Amino acid sequence: MTRIKNSWLYLLKVEKITVMSKHQIKFYPVDNGDTSLIKLSDGTNILVDCKLREGEETESGSKIFNVKGDLLSELPKRDKNVHLDVFIVTHPDNDHLLGFKKNFYFGKPEDFGDSNRENEEIIIDELWVTSMVFKDCTNEDAKSLKREAERRRKLWQNDSRDKDAAGNRLRLIGYDAEERFQSLPNSIPGETINKFNGKVLNNFELFVHAPFKESLIIGTAEKDQNFCSIVMQARFKIKPDDKDVTCRFLFGGDADHYIWAEVLNKTESHKNSLMLEWDIFLAPHHCSWTFFNNVPYGNPEENKNPKASALKILDYKRTDAMIIASSKVIINNDDNPPHFKAK
Image (cartoon, rainbow, N blue to C red; front, top):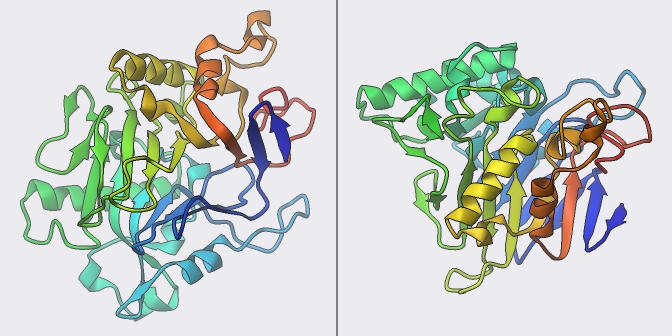
């Protein structure tokens, strides 16, 4: 690990960080990709993105950590079936959704059968996505996610009595193009969420920073789905009646510097600066230079200079803050991500 001023940059091996009594955040080593498991003291489990690889080794010969096996050991069983309370998909790119089709169950909860159980498929009680999942899909996992999100959305639109049952729950983050979603649970930037899988919690909450409605229409730095990434601050308390938040975890999928600049501007202008503070920061886009400026680095020359807004986001760190780089080993070459100068 590398010391950076008053922060730490962690390159993932198997990093399990206990942020307070009984609450944990577990960051899985998946090379360039994200898989983060938030485990709360009341037993609630929240997974942010997934990258579940098969096999024992990568093409380069490095060992693949068995994320699926570890999840099965971490998640509870109900009626012999493995359940995940909430699955947050920051955006449906392959490195944030790999293995979804094979390892998670999609379909009516009552149809979960022996074959699904034998395959050790995980039931997602509540699914959180943006409107991007309903658009054109780029991979098979995203297509499966789209089908499942559409199935759940129809239950709400048809006012089905099963719409709020575990395995059918859905929350949309952001906007449906230029309008707010109608007839189903949704949260937009500036709102705080403290209800997870039907339970209201008073020792944990998520503040929504992005995506913005304009981001869901127009691309920015890399002209792909990264601009629609969900950006949130997770806020933990040790005890429900504590006045102060003990730990703040800031994450934003692959959001680039354009998005983070807008997050900074909107949050400060609404006098919500506390929602930018962080004790743990998941480096955007696997420690990519896109958090700091446009790519390619150094071409044109002004791309080498970090944007003031990106540096200010980092300045919201608290004492002994940690930066997590969910990436390959960072070496001094031209890769991006991870990017050596970004590190």
